[in-house]
Length: 419
Image 1: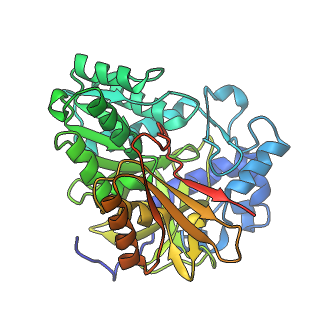
Image 2: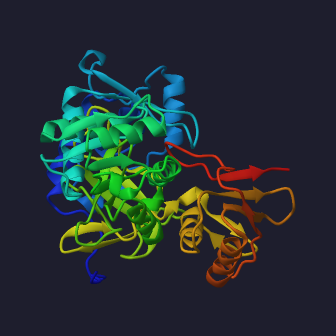
C-alpha cells in the first residue's frame, strides 16, 4: 500500500455537521456529558472546527464510565434521552475491568446495524451466502448486531449459540454454510475439532471467515493458518467494542488493513503518554467520538487500542489492524513486548496448536515462559524465532496436544505469576 505521509490524520470536514449535531443533543439532555463539559465555553455546545474540538474537549476513559455507573446504577448517566426511549441493553465482557452496561434506542441500534452491514459487504458476503455465527449470544453487543445485519441484508443466518464445537461442525455441514463468523482462536479450534472428528477441510462449504475480538485477524501468519485449515477460505478482519459498536472493516484490496467508518466516528490517534496527536504512520492510541450513536455517546473516548494510522486516498486506514492494547505492553529485560507481536512469532514458527505465556513477576526483573502444543523441534523453532526477532531468550516448552485451554471468545493465553 502506498504511503501518504503528507496527508494529516484529521477527520474530513464532512464530520463537522455530525459533530455539531451530537454536541447539541448531548449538551441538551445527557447528564454525564453536561457535567464533564461544564467548564468549556458554552458548556461544549459549539465548536469552530475539528481542530478546535480536539484542542478543547476532554478525553473520556473507561474508568470515567465505570465510576459513573457505580454512582448512578444500574446504567449510569450517559443517556441522552429519557429512559423509555431505550429498548436494548448489552454489556462489555469485563476482561479489562468491571463490565459496563450499554443502552440503545431503536435509532442508535439501526445506525450500528448499518455499520455491520458495511463490515459484511466489505468481506464479500452477499445474499447468496449462508452465514453461521459461532457465538454464545450472551450479553455482548457484537453477536446480536452481526446476526441482525445479516438478516437485513437478506443473508441466510444461522445462530450457533448453545452448541458444542462438534455440534457446530455438524450444522456447518448439514446446512452448507458458506460464511463463518467467530474469533481467530475459535476458527483454529473448530478446525482442530474437525480433524479430531475425522473431517477434512473439503468436507465444508466455508468460503469466507469473518473474525474479530483479537489482534490475530490482521496478523499474516494467523490469517494464513486459518485459511489453510479451512480449505483456502478468505479471511477478513474487523473490530469494534460494546461502547462504540463496529468501528472498522477490512480494506478488501489490502488484507490486514482496517478502514475506519468515518461516517459514524470521528477518529484521532494520540501519544498514550502525552495525549498529543501523532504523525501519520506512528504508533498511538485510537480515540473515538461516536457521531451516530447519539443515544449513548462517547466523546474523545480512549479505546486503549494501539494502532498505526494513515489517510490514504481519503480514507483513514489502520495498517496491520489493531496492534495490541496500550496497557498490554511488557518490558522484558529492556525489550518492549506486545502480545500480538509474540502471537505472530509463535504462528510463524511451525505447526503449533495452542500456546500459553506465563508472565513471572515474582522476581525484580519480569520474565516470560511459553508452553506450546507441538513437538520439541517446533518448540525450539519458536524460541529461535523470538530470539531472532526480539533479541530475547525465552524458554519454550513442548506439551502434549489438548493440554492447554481452548477459547470460544477472546483467548486468554497470558497468565501472571505475582509475588
